[in-house]
Length: 101
Figure 1 (spheres, rainbow, N blue to C red):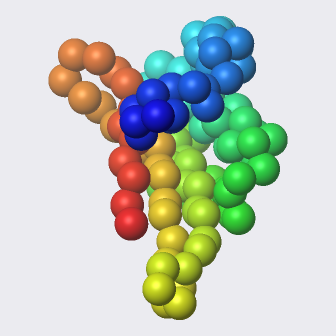
Figure 2 (figure 1 turned 180 degrees about the vertical axis):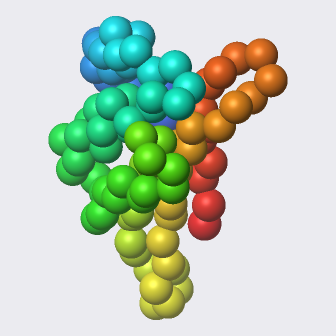
């Protein structure tokens, strides 16, 4: 099985829809993204795959959500970090997600 197909087969479609529905139900207009950040942090913790989930205060009511997965590569410590940062994109009003290695 190719990597994209393997990844797709691992997706919990019902869980993904429930997550999207939960997100859509939370008012999160700028500058009131705190509730949605708390929701995302709780969902990340429920997954159990993150070693650490942090709500990083940036501006009052607008925290970043950071998920850290620690591991090793060739015996050297490494980590992956996924962040959700509320920003002011031009037309969408959506936050951004970045993954760093």
